Image 1 (tube, one colour):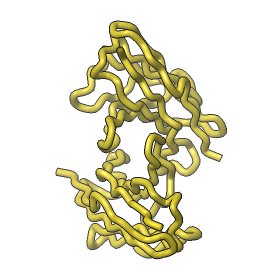
Image 2 (image 1 turned 180 degrees about the vertical axis):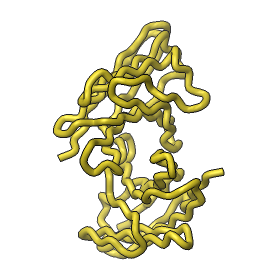
Image 3 (image 1 turned 135 degrees about the vertical axis):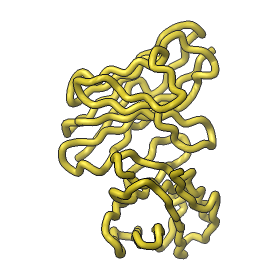
Length: 116
Length: 109
């Protein structure tokens, strides 16, 4: 149980384009989803927390107009990187916390974004 | 401020035992987690401690002392596949996870 999927696993795009990443909880309802970014050999950095049906809460320094988060259902959250630039190239990972085992976050496999 | 400390890197031998320590100072405490992250992959959940004491799960054990702000992850019968970063994270009073930088565990034959 507690499986989280992400799509796509890899994306390469041109500078200035927008990229959408999906995060799905497959066998539980995710009341809260989290989006992280991780640069090579660095720690996980929390970008934002989203609760189903409400606006995401962004961490300090994360531009909400650049990283659009939608958590429209209890099983799906999306992160859209708008007007991506090479410095946005990173490993984006979502996690989900459900209505059972409420403490534990389960991670998706991550999405590698390369902006050329 | 909130702080999680764990060693940057540890080396151990296949078949041996290794203990990775984690100390924390956070605003409130709602549990401590250990996650494992292999290179190029997302973290996977290992353990959760909210009460003092030792939790054992197969080759992995996790210990917590809330009064000391201290935890450790104990890995027994080390295997080469245990080479990974082990991440300590504490859930604070707002139910947010505060992450340590991770301990890179290197297993040698």
